[in-house]
Length: 189
Image (tube, rainbow, N blue to C red; front, side):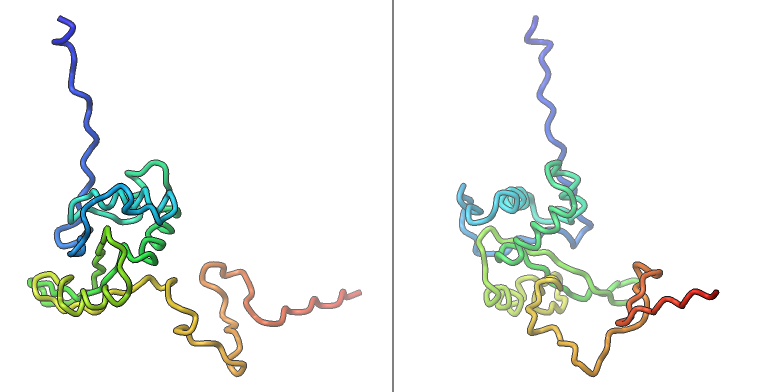
């Protein structure tokens, strides 16, 4: 009688899928799964990478969704981990234009590619040039790293002839951004 009252253990909800055409895309030529796949990464990055690796293609691996389904990590931790995975060669973002058949307009979308095997920039560039990351014949530029990952040499340096802008910062409109602070006026009296 006690056996008939047992119920199956509740299963974890399935990870949400992204909109059709978006989400995780796996890179080809990966080695089979092993326990040591992400051993070279710090614990947090290895944990998130192992979770992403087990997800099917098309899964939503946005920062917000991963922070929602991984209760140990918040959005900032997930964003930092994804950046480190990109630097390590496991994750790459690629931009491409998508045409809307009904309106004929074009828009830029970001595609996310994941590889269990760490890849260098040369491999990712060849992957994109061969058209592996393309979907339905769309032109895809080379995958890009996040803006924060650019080397300092690729960012133009400020010259002495170009002083900092005196326009207030949009985030803090009351904050002054001029180089010389204004002097207080003498007391009248």
